[in-house]
Length: 263
Image (tube, rainbow, N blue to C red; front, side):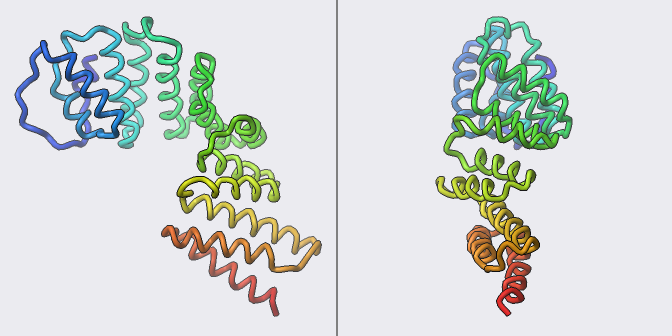
């Protein structure tokens, strides 16, 4: 817990009188509400000033978990990993449910993923899934396996019960592209674009699938139409509208290919 209180994060310093022990439980609830609402600056401010002497072990463990999550989101991967580990090793953890314990292992896995330590990440996420097979944990495992090059496993993990989130379908489509299953990738990525406000990278990846399929078909002389190129350009237009500079460069090359094909 000492590391938790002494950890330093880049935030504004507020001049506030030390909290009394009597208010520690109320502050604990305020921290959790602020974190859940996405007010990380507010949660950090309270974490740095609150008195934890009246909190039980489980509540102290939760605060370490919140601290670690904020650190990870702020890019402090090694600090976050240390606090997720402290959360799992703290005296309050035995009183937590399997779901609550899985949060710690999932946090470790995300840290290892961000650090590029994929084998360690896979071990951590498997522990999380063994405790609770949450969709979020499944997605993190799929991301790790993608980075390990296990594309078939990625598709298998995301084949069943994939939620209506563009990020999930995008990852599945990328794995299919890596395996040169371009028609499947197109179908998957088109599905990803049907959800609310799909990000530019989804449209970019859809364009990539169209371009790869078009190049394969053209090289094998199965067809010489411009349908694939035109559909790729449509997807790139969407990405450009969302501010993608990568799409602009790709679009220039696709237009050049279309012009040559049309001659």
